[in-house]
Length: 450
Ligand SMILES: [Zn+2]
Image (tube, rainbow, N blue to C red; front, side, top):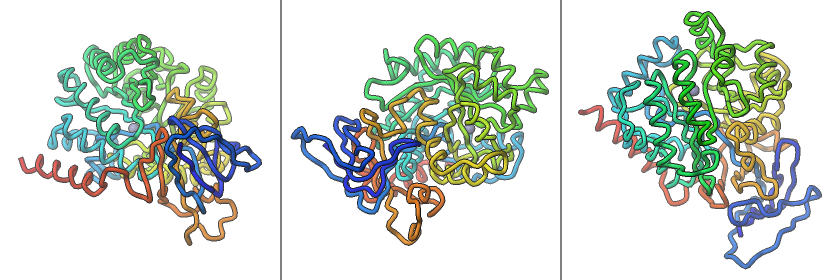
């Protein structure tokens, strides 16, 4: 049994908190404190482990609903900042070609991005993988499986939860579907809903958007999803997406997605910056979930998603960082703070607890994972212990709200995934973050010297 001892406050979910001890066994929350703050729970005689949470706030582990882990190898790339999408895409493509996308690079990049994520309190990452060896539609299916295996291996080694999203960016539709099938077979054979029995690995599918992928790709990846019960994820209504859809089809992206069968409860749409009231109403009526990615949308100039309006319509809104090509950090709490700060520019403000709920439960619901993102009895024991005893949190009246408002860039002292301590006293357990960084940098240096 693992005991998280003596927390100042424990956030169970968006609307309930407790204090004191939290008990974990077999990877799940055993018996959180009653709302009165009285500890309970029984020891079953397994070796006891204790994490001290004195002066700390405990939250559910953060869930990053939208990342592109490969881009961790391409951060602050010259020519990718302050440029239009039409410049950004070929600049990134040239960098991918120069480095050479393969399982080795994916492993090193995913390992760095996932390590960074865990150290920032992110226990689950959805890796929307869009770029494949050989370029669009020119990839050997086995190599795509190798990429997926590399990401999964990096997550397993670090103890992170991974959702590998078989993405597509102008891929040949049939090849993308064959690859998605092969990745399901390799990573989560026979798994219900594409989630492995231990819950640490999940597979989903996701064309990049109507701006890049054909109706055929949406249809065939949708068929793979239907066969295996996978979640479907795509990006929609970045301003550029709307512009291209209008130019190419004379229609808006939501209209196209609806026609193509992609406005449904198993679909999560990332970005949703330029979205109308009528579109919000239709998304809500059809049970679509959303991912807000402000630290990508702002620098890319795509606008600000109307998060309050989306939430008010009943849409579950999660939070994502997007990848290193647009957002150079995998620090979801920092982006939650940004989301909270910019919300009043496009609607009603959102509170710290609401945005923390988005970064946990909101993201988890979009992934079809109700056991993640909260610390109720029986939930997955993914949690962060945030030390709020330092000067950056001094005289903060509300330590839970302070997690967001105060101390930007804060990192958790301890992180637990499925009941296993993966970060202790700000360092990875069993891995050295400096080695992980050096491995990625050395690999890139070797590739660029070729
Ligand atoms: Zn993205």
